[in-house]
Every structure is written in C-alpha cells, then in structure tokens.
Image (cartoon, rainbow, N blue to C red):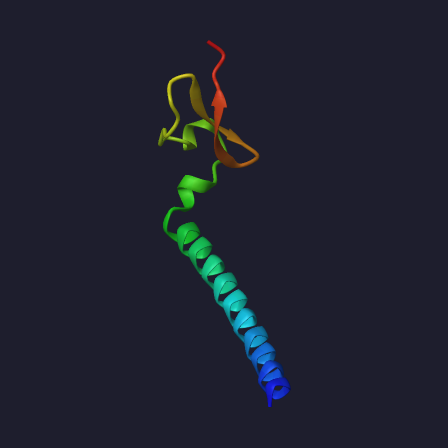
Length: 76
C-alpha cells in the first residue's frame, strides 16, 4: 500500500512539474510576442535617432547597438 502510494505520488509530481514548465514557457513566449507586437519601435532600431525614449540616468545615453536600443556611457 505504501509503495503504491509513493509510486502514484512520484508519477503525479512529475506530471505537475511538466505542466508547470509548459505553462511558464508558453507564458514567456506570449509575453515576449505581445511586447514585440505592441512596442516594436522600442526594442529595435536602425539609427540612434530611433531610440527617442530615454530611460537612462545622466551619464548614460540611449544608443542603437546591434539593432537594439541600449544605454551607453556618454563621452562627456
């Protein structure tokens, strides 16, 4: 009886872990795609002028590097 319960418990636990991983992967993909579709101009750029939003503090500036906006230390 105890062995049957422990086997059942381990099988059920493994199933729950797989379901949690599937859900988390689907959630990550969904969130990334929704952010990509709604704010495509925030993530990707071709020139420094495309990075118009500035979330950097004073010594840092927004620059386009590898087609993505990133904060770069300014040469003042």
